[in-house]
Amino acid sequence: MAAASLHANMLQPMLATATAAALVILGLAMLYPAQIARLIGRGRKQRAGCLPLRMKNGNLQLLLVTSRRAPQWYTFPAGGIEPGEMCAEAAARETLEEAGAVGQIGRLVSCIYSAHACTSMFAMWVETELESWPEQRERKRQWFDLGEPGSPVKSRLDGVRSVLMPKPSQQNVLCACERLVDELLSEGGPPGKSNGM
Image (cartoon, rainbow, N blue to C red; front, side, top):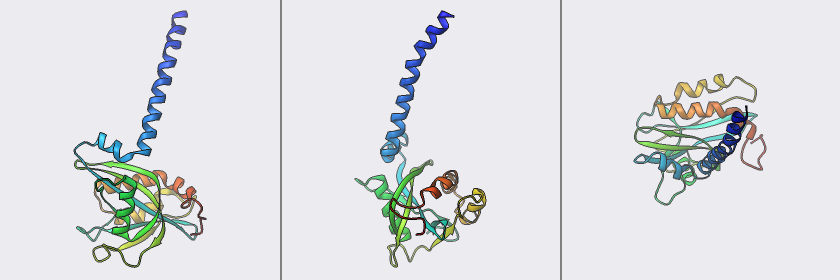
């Protein structure tokens, strides 16, 4: 009995240290996703993109753009991170270039790893849609309705799933969105904005 108690007392500080270390790593990953992704994904191209969102008439909507290579499919705006650029800056730039959307970068939604790339995807609360943008002749943009709070998550994303490029990386981003859609709905937009955007 005394040996078990001694053993438990020895394990407690080790568990506390391991938990603290895990929290530090998780915190660093949230603050510096591009740098952590580089460490994990050495040799992979570093990319960033957005899930452009807005609240309209009480519904959450997601903006997608057509693929240049396969224009019958929609995709999330994303692209390479330029030298010296932060991950979130690259995500915002790519969304402006590909979708003509400008807004507040929100939470990191997912990091998607493929054989050749590591892509950090952020929520973006769209505030402005430009009438003219760099890739408007190469891509179409379209808003997809994800429904209102309380409706079944799967049915909210069926319309997006049917038009989204069937690449695993795109489907993985949608799965991450599916897991977080209720939290994103509760955020309802950039800080200081109402849900009636």
